[in-house]
Amino acid sequence: FVNKLRVLSSIFQKRKDKQQAINYFSQIFGPDVTIEKIVYDADSQLLTFRLIAADIFTLEKVFELLSTEQSIKRFSSLAKSNLQRTSSGVYQMQVTVVMEVEEE
Image (cartoon, rainbow, N blue to C red; front, side, top):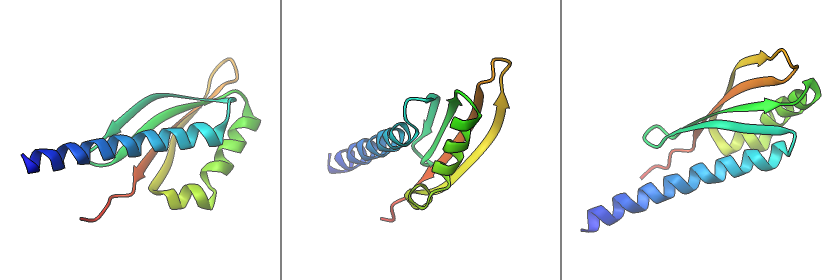
C-alpha cells in the first residue's frame, strides 16, 4: 500500500511539472504564439510541443525567450527543430524540453 502511494505521488508530481512547464511557455510567449500538439513522456521527462508564431518578428522574440538564462536553467535540455513557414506566412516550430530529473 505504501509503495502504491509513493508511485501515485510520483505520477502526480510529474504531471504537475509538465503543467508548470506548459504554463511557463504560455506566459513568456504571450498571446501572439500558439502552443499545440503537446506530447509528454513521464518516464523520460520529455515534453514536446509545436508552437505557431504569427510573423517573423514574433518568431524572433520566441528565439530570444528560449535562449534566456531563465529558460536554459529551468530545463535540462531545450531543443528547437522543424522550423517551417506556411504559405500564409505563419511560422511553426517544434520545441523539445527535458525537465530536471530529480535524484532520489
